[in-house]
Length: 415
Image (cartoon, rainbow, N blue to C red; front, side, top):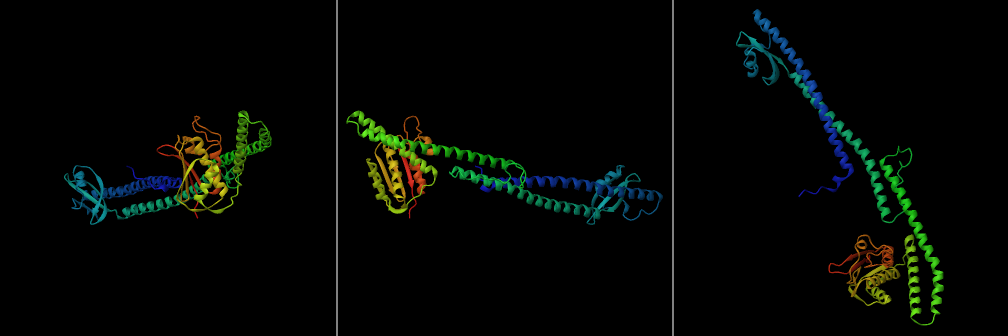
């Protein structure tokens, strides 16, 4: 199994820093090797030419019977064996080797058939020059890499900071804050902050999307509210007219449909108010167990209430009863009994034993007017319950029990 990498190792800034460091090291190594090879070849070539020149002079002196001079001799014991064999074979050559602990450039050539005439030239200064050059290359490479990393980190950090800002705004929009905007300073034509770039293009696209989405949602909210308000007056008259009809089965059907339309209209008005995000709660301290029992009685349904652990909560009683009433009503309407409401501290669960919630509802939450396969429609009740829970600052989640049935869990903040 591959070991898990730390979270910071996958960030763009770290990846960019690693890439810059690797490229700087590779470039510095390449340039350093080229300079080292060039200078070393030049230095060694000069020392070799000097040694061969002195070997020629020493050979002429030896043939003339003169003294060979300092550093020259026939078959000196310090002469490297490989160079001696080369000279005895009749060739001339050079080699760098240590002589009494000092680097020396040797040059050797044949004399008298089977003997080697050698010249030793001190190579210490050249060796120190190459070592100093290598140290200078290492120091300059380190400084260049450090400076490049600092400049690169500064540039990448500016980009990643703008990307983080864009991501934060996107999360705020997904959470429902449609007024959030990036407002990147480089958005649009060339500005004081610089010409537009890819990050500015992403930020501009996000701002445009948010503005378009906000406009469409506001138009939908206005349409919903207007329709609900316009329906209210004729429905009131229709309800009054239905009450004047003579008793009988047709009258009951008319009154039932009128009541359903009035309920739908009131639900639409409530959703339009929730969509505005301007709902205000009236907080008070309530015992959760008795409040849940009242909500079940108001719903007029046969629901079992279990209080495992009662707790005091600071909440808006009317809104909380609305949430619990809608959850219980949905369980009875679309599920099967028994329906059980359980209070366990600040957590309230409503469970039925039907076919469970559809997959899209569990994954994405309730969606108004959506049903799936005709097996479990939810109307507006769960949408209102989710909206009222958000107003209360509570968390409402939907799931299916392993042994069957739908489970709605409401988690409140306890005192």
